[in-house]
Image 1 (cartoon, rainbow, N blue to C red):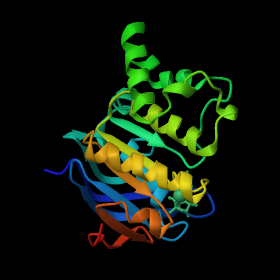
Image 2 (tube, rainbow, N blue to C red; image 1 turned 45 degrees about the vertical axis):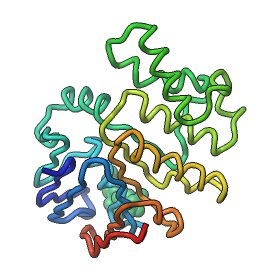
Image 3 (tube, rainbow, N blue to C red; image 1 turned 135 degrees about the vertical axis):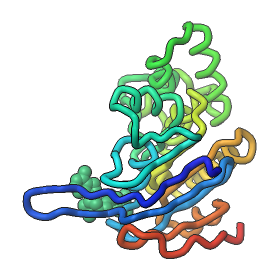
Image 4 (cartoon, helix red, strand yellow; image 1 turned 90 degrees about the vertical axis):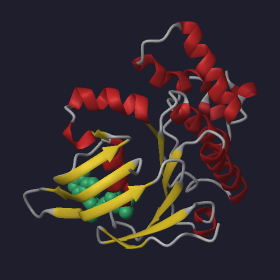
Length: 229
Ligand SMILES: Nc1ncnc2c1ncn2[C@@H]1O[C@H](COP(=O)(O)OP(=O)(O)O)[C@@H](O)[C@H]1O
Ligand SMILES: [Mg+2]
């Protein structure tokens, strides 16, 4: 059984003018502990697919199963709880809270779990150490470079020890050097920490870090050949 299993998933956004179906009868599997890159033209459904994996969007039809849990069948409150434990999400724009320090930003997901302050502090310290930012813990986002902000965002994504990490163009705003460092870090999450990573990118250089590259076009997978990485 794959860690991530989508079966015949269709997602339609309905509106008064026209319906949009970015994902059509999609079957998609990701093995535990692998790094999959999604590529495809703008509007091909990449972000929608990540949202389905994160339980942010629900499929119109079909099933999404992650680590044995059919998330497409959970209620909204069950889904919110599941998401906190199971999924970390990394955005192109980092999405840090500007008035919180790096430490406090990483703490946010933990506030939804029942943990003692000591346990929280231990987890935050571990996550910041994993991304190499122990010495920046008390800086605000604006006092950090783009690459450092993205590493704080990655620490926030892994602090609750999720099985799956999803990243939507995480290097899109970074220069090549910061992008390379970010990719080394994401690769390490898979190799050392056993995370399963699904990442969207437009950048073929970035995509080379993956175990497998999946091309989406018009809501369907066109190829899923292994990369040469
Ligand atoms: N919440 C939404 N409501 C209506 N249409 C949406 C919504 N989210 C995405 N879409 C549409 O679905 C299509 C795929 O979008 P998206 O998944 O963001 O593509 P990509 O990330 O590959 O650029 C686009 O046509 C987009 O306009
Ligand atoms: Mg997108």
